[in-house]
Length: 195
Image (cartoon, rainbow, N blue to C red; front, side, top):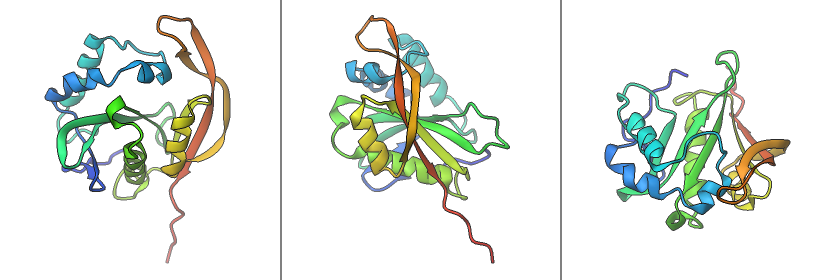
């Protein structure tokens, strides 16, 4: 993807998706409460040191490089971190034109509609010819995570089916790894008319 992230970020007037900044570190680590850990895939180190290292790496990227993760903040308070969003791809691009998107929010931001707003913004930009110019975005969540299902649907990602035993989670801190069925959501860009 050759897109350039807007210098001012993406906003709808209530939330703002912006590049990570070094001073976000403490707030970023604080987002990872029990609820975030419960629904996050157990595929990477989530220690405080590892989280700070990932944020520092993202914050040090030059503006001309497209990051795959952004801070979600209040538009009126751009230093007040609400959550994080990212995208990743396991399919070669081209010829595939899709990414998987994800998000997480701190307890103070849940239930306020900001997750839906952030996913709408990111999805719209990724599918727009003036943004990522992708054909498809998709999102998986554990079937048991009803809140994520509501957020995805409200953000325009349609339920497309289930993936059995797809998501490695720990149901309790320090518990065994359990592979959960996921609900797959997708959104495609509108067909373009020619002529």
